[in-house]
Image 1 (cartoon, rainbow, N blue to C red):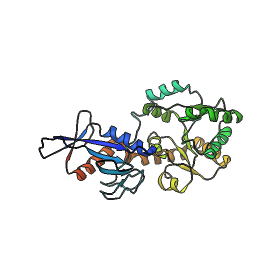
Image 2 (cartoon, one colour):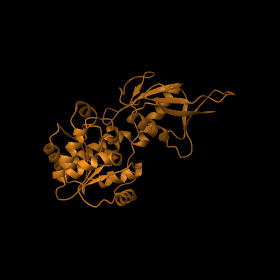
Image 3 (tube, helix red, strand yellow):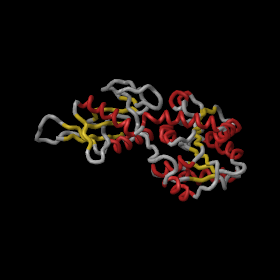
Image 4 (cartoon, rainbow, N blue to C red):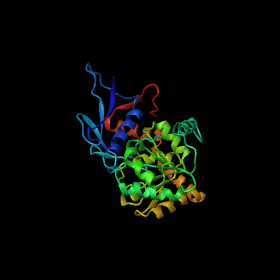
Length: 303
């Protein structure tokens, strides 16, 4: 008899906890645990709790916790280039589905009516006003001749930000983007020149794993947390000086050799998160904790 694997997040889960839950559900959608003992009663699901303990949880995952914590304590996830090992679990990446330009690039270009270069993406939780101010002020000089600034998830904040954009003379340069599907985001990452995360709140930095996987260079605010976890593949900029941020953007756009270094480091950072590699780690770990064999149904990629 097979036992189902259930992934659950508490009602107050953070953005990264919900993202891990969603991706593990997708990864394990066709997985079951093979029970060796016969029983007249259906077995309880093997429950993986993300962020906090839920009823009946056998395993608790703390996404930003210590990745070398030993079970049955809450297990942290590994990010980027930390040393690999059988017990280092990772969030699966939403990577590109093919090499080079694909239909996702053309579809999102048409949907958002993108036409100019450089194409600079902005990512952030839109809570740190100084981070946005720095981005807009730096962008005014970088896009003086041509180009587009694209605010990921910006539609929800358009009423508040539109007057600011207009006062800075960027009304024709800024594109407010709605929530996008993974395929649309993939096309946008492929078509862009640069992504900027200038806010102090690192709550959405986990999404950079996907950005790195698409070979898109990233500029990030220099904080201790950013330096420790996300800094290796990025260009770090300290403080709120728009001139420094503008120079950093221009350097990434114009300096081909430096740009290639950032791209190579980003791909190196994201590689351990690739779906097949992550699946192997999770399978081995679940089998060790449960004492049962993981089986993949039709369409599963458990190896």
